[in-house]
Length: 295
Image 1 (spheres, helix red, strand yellow):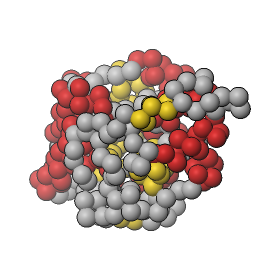
Image 2 (cartoon, helix red, strand yellow; image 1 turned 90 degrees about the vertical axis):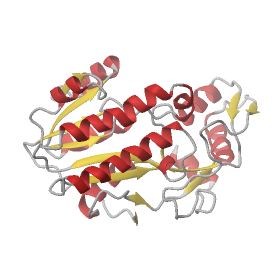
Image 3 (cartoon, helix red, strand yellow; image 1 turned 90 degrees about the horizontal axis):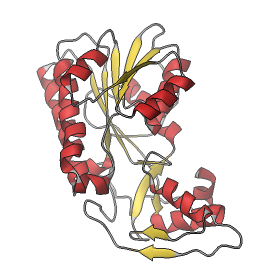
């Protein structure tokens, strides 16, 4: 289901209720938590990175923090106590590292998600929101395969537990998310160091973290089942992204140094958010000036 973004109102957060955000210490998770708290909800989060959780607690003392692994049933049982709904964001999401460490990727994205689904099967929850990726539309690597299976499991649980509300959103790439090439390129450009790019003609769907959070609540308002809920998105050519970032961040006396290494295992030249939808290569593109405003 492809949709147009409609609003950023929050109609599915109720004051006094408690919302579990898995992976709440991540880039998207922190933004989502801010929205939930602003709407009057209480938040509990589970994540593995103790340092990031401490930082989150300092920023939002009211958030209940659980340091744990979603792939550990004991940790998940602890996180699921006294909650009303779930936003499942925790994931191992670096495409390249997933190829090198498939066990860790599967452990987090598949086993962790299955733990969540099994442990909540007999709970009374308002909804379970699963966050997925456009890498599931054309599966070419471990990361995409693990998230594709997560989507399939969610659909299976929906069939087995029809009284539950399961929802799934599919994202493109979120600007400046953890591990994003934008973070690496920005630091390297400001230091006038060599940039590594896979393929300048490669394209990706990109949007901001606020748009990503908006999609979650649009899905809760408009979706009717667990089938992937995706937005209409414009794409960015990676060569244009590099040009825009160089114009914005490279020192005036600097020299752009680029090393092209070609497409890597698990990557696609162009992406899709739906298997029968248009690819990022076919989609409308952001101009370099538009990209500069976004970054």
